[in-house]
Image (cartoon, rainbow, N blue to C red; front, side):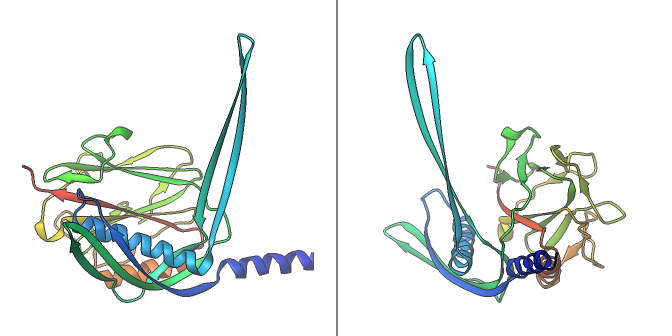
Length: 273
């Protein structure tokens, strides 16, 4: 029993190893991509590169062989699926990412330098899927581009029951969920949940040239996620936070809940033509 406890303790300590990581990444964007979109892609890839450099990646390959017989003829099909997962997660960004924008021969290149605190992940997390939907609730309405006046809905599905929180970042941080008086939003296992569909809770996009790109933060955990305390409420009744308030709360959540998962999606709002 003592050996088992010591082994489990060693595994838990290893899974919680923290490190300061950094990376510089250059992204060559396609012609159809805006500067803001390219900056977000470059930042995400820089973070992944920093995590992979520090903690490594888990690469696995699954091979499948299918044998079929039809009319006396036998055929064999072989397929291979390879996956690669970074064995770390970003906890907190230190300072602000530094960008360099360059145009060469009409092509856009974005170089970003980022530094932060990260944690090793050596355990399997539950599956958690999200979608941002434009003007409809079916899966085929998923989009990252919205126009002034469009409605945004969110779809969330998890393999286990737990709790969800959703934030929107533009010029400030707004808490979209939970919106219940008790400050928590529970979701059931295996069920597709739709949010912002009820009258009075729908989210309509408003074009603002100063904040064309918005980041949507999805937080999921089997443990309760209680929204941060704030004294500011916007005109729509949503709690509002500064970047510093939100980042401190988010870093504290990640430090205390190893099962917390965060997915960030970006939406690009355009003026109606």
